[in-house]
Image (cartoon, rainbow, N blue to C red; front, side, top):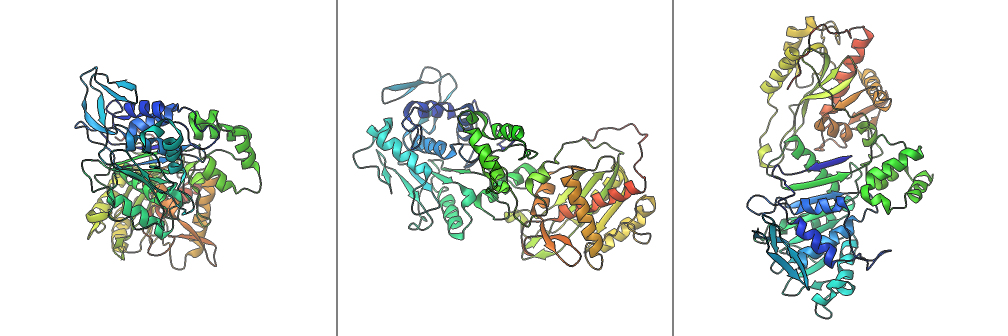
Length: 552
């Protein structure tokens, strides 16, 4: 499974990556480890990633200010970051025009000839590169690889004697490579041209996050050098709010169209979330999916033994070897459980559905809670987003409020588009609107919350037993694969939900009351599914007689 975010202008044919691949394979060797000192031959997946990070726009400017590479433990992503660091430090890593054909780049008696129309490269003036690591006691795997190449590899001749040290590498012609940790001297004021942030799923502590934020700010200072950053990571533990999690959330918002002018390249690969950890054949297939072309050099049998070892937490195995984001211990549903039910299905006009609605108009510490309208097809339990309203981040969210008229219109449009047999809505803060919906649509509904209030379905108050029961039925349906779902915001909200144990049983809530991680779409999905269950119990799921027309 792949999750990728690209610019609309992305085109691998317009990239300095072709030159970068040649340069790395010509001048770099593997760093410390079993194959140290051996020549580098990039596999297709990593070669493609290099083409992506060096993609250009039509003016020859870099498309991306930051890139994120998420791969399983042992995939050599830190080593790849080291090769890119070397290219940024010494190689022709910035645009120098388009070739007419026959031009060439030459270094250390090696020559690369450009094809007609290919992007040509030139060295960066006084490159300043920072390699971030989490521990003071070690410089980081990326820096170790760079240091080995510049002291014992083919590139060692490029540096004066004693120019490379464990705390700093001075580059010929000016520039340097510096390893940094959170406890190092202040990083503010730097003028980085490139920065590597290794294993950002570990960047959880405030000091590490401040280090990351400071270096990212520094990257905006040198326009001519077109600075950028590369994050490499194994998947994170949701809820820890690591840098990796925050970057993934940004990628999701870009895909949802909820943020503007973002220049992020995001590339994540994981095994199928449905992989059975007790089935050796599925384990082998899942590991091959996760590691891709690199699986040929991995000790797959050893990893399978580690997964079967009862001393190891299965959630850790999923995260480290399958690169799946695993959930916090109090998660309502884990990411593998929920993602295993994902499906993309067409919803036809006139189909029987139920609706779930959870609205909010409350502003909490400057952040307005979300409002969600979720549909559920009666015939198969497929959940889908009709609309989710969330406060935009940054300046666009200043003074933002839920567009109540727009919400009202979307509800009415759903009734016109589909055969809505029932709608359950938590009326808190929306009592007047729901009263109008009940007045206009209540008599037509085949499934009613009550005769007096056919749509009102309170999630609070004296109904704790009913809420607990609805949540349990929803959770069981996910675990037993009796429902399916699609929608990025829906998934995000479901995985944000945390279990809270009360007198009546398990309910759900945000991780804390002021958390920006919303769960409103999860509540709406539970209501839509509960309404669907009641429709089935009443025998209201009937075969439609209309001729469906696909909604575009």
